[in-house]
Amino acid sequence: MTERVRALAPEGVDLALDAAGSGLLELIELAGGEDHVITIADFAGAKKYGVRFSSGESGRAIYALAQVAELVDSVNFLLPVRQTFPLADIAEAQRVGETGGVRGKIVLLVD
Image: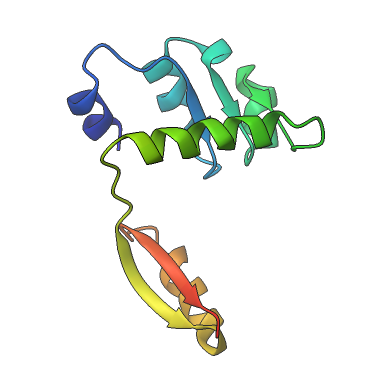
């Protein structure tokens, strides 16, 4: 993903939000330092690398997610779906996600 971001923003990015729980070092590099990264998914990584962690209790995560939502609305943003599963197949969806090679989101369909 780092290469794709660099292709879209060769000068780097101003801020980065980690919602996946992995890749903090890459985000720090892309954003120009740990002060420009916030994570809502990697408490241990935040502590290790000096990145801000937000559990949402103070409203910071909600604020960050609102900013991300504005960006998604204002830019041609594509979030590819790799595969969908009915809720009854949640265990299979988990197995597919754990392979680590999935490109795109795994979506659970809830009736």
